[in-house]
Length: 299
Image (tube, rainbow, N blue to C red; front, side):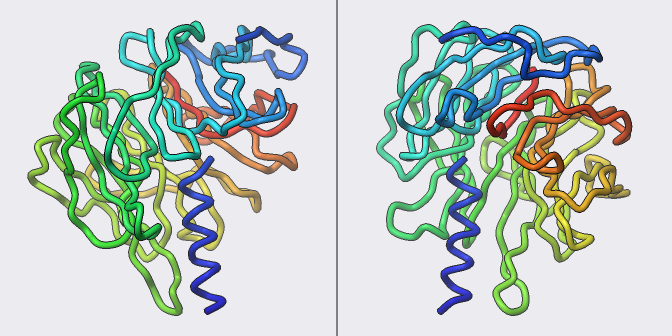
């Protein structure tokens, strides 16, 4: 029974995570390319949605609610952000913090939305309202209409991410090892629900995968070595390579728009915070030093 409850706690922890601030909380000594990084942070006291430049400047709070925001994703045109809340709803907001609206869905407990490269579709995870350890990957039009289930596997399917050409979706699928050890294999599937394919099964928790902008590499978090670290491999699952080596908890990696850098989350400084590094794992830099921050997306 104790193992069962510990399993549920682990699963729940994975599922459920407008004013300008001074850059005093940030390390801006290095420039890290173009685009914007959106994330959630407790800098204002609650898990709210934020956005900033990759060098930490332009830090702006986009939401200020009593409910926890999580898992933001910036649209391909950089104009909107979709995100989920811990009550199982998916929302959308402009990147300037205006026009916040909920996407009305009649299915499940929904999280982890991700825009298609052409901005016409959103893929997301939907959990069963009856079984907390059962979810699948769904797809819908960008306005929330025409939701359709893509996966029909057992247990939890989570963390969908698009191949840059829009032809495939990567996700994690939960399996159980010895003594109820929670493992995650990486799979891909086409947006029409066809050609489901196993990418990586290495008896570890492989989660939060993201394709590089050129589609040739995948960055992901894995505890293959006994601790959660950031890894990179070829898009076909070959040549996995560990690029962080720290006793801390390193997760939530995402690529910069030019593929030269990776943002990720680590508690190596004490709290969960957004860090940046070169794509080979070198030149680590902590961006934020106040509160806690997680779920970065870089576009």
